[in-house]
Image (cartoon, rainbow, N blue to C red; front, side, top):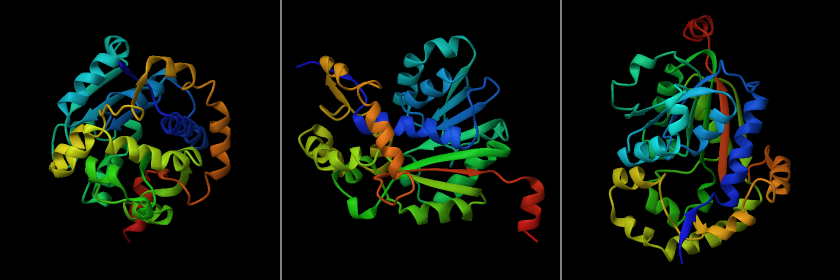
Length: 276
C-alpha cells in the first residue's frame, strides 16, 4: 500500500489552536508580522503562517528537515517572504545576527528536547522585539509518558502550571497556557502508540537523543503521519471542523496531551524594574 503525508486529526486541531492563540494575542493577519519558527521541521506550520500574510524564517539543526522545508516552501522562498537557516539557537552563533528581528518567535514540540528550557526561552525572546510574543508547544502530562517519548528524544512532559512557571522564569509576562486537541488526541493516544510500536520507530529507542531529535519532525509512520491517499476525504479542515470547535471548550483545562502557550517579551523599562 502506498502512503502519502496527511496531517492526523490531532495535528489539524493543533494548527487551528495556533490560529486561535494568534487571534487571542491580537496578532492578526498582517504582512508586517515577521516570525521565526525554531524547529520548523518540514515547514507545515510556517506554511500556515505564510498563508496568513506573515513573513518569516525557519530554523532547524536537521539538514534533512531544512531540505524538506525548502522543497515544500519553494514559492514563498522565491518571493522573498521566507528564508531557511540550518542552526541551533542553543549552540550556534549564526542566529545571533537576527536579534530583535521578529514580532513573533515560535517553537513547537522542541523545548522538551532541551536540557536547559529556561535558557531556550530566553534565546527565543532575544530574537523578538520588546512587546513581541513567544509561542511554545510542548507535550503535556507526565502521566502519559509512552513509547513516542522514548523514540523521539523527549526529556520531559509538562504540566500546565509548570510550563507557565518556566516561561515566567525566563522573563516572559502575561503568560497564557492552553490544553489543545482535547478530546481528539486523548481518544487517539493508545491507537497512536500502537502504530508506533508496529512501525520501524521502535528501533530508535537505542539511538542517541540527538539522533532521535533530528528525525522527530520528519517521521513517516503508517496511519499516524502518513496515510493512504483516500484518507484526504476524511482528514481535512472541513470534515474535522466540529473537532476544532469542540477543543475550544477545553483550552483552559489541564487535560491536554499538548500544551500551547504564549507570553509577552518585556520592554527594557520592565526588565530594569524587575532587576532592581
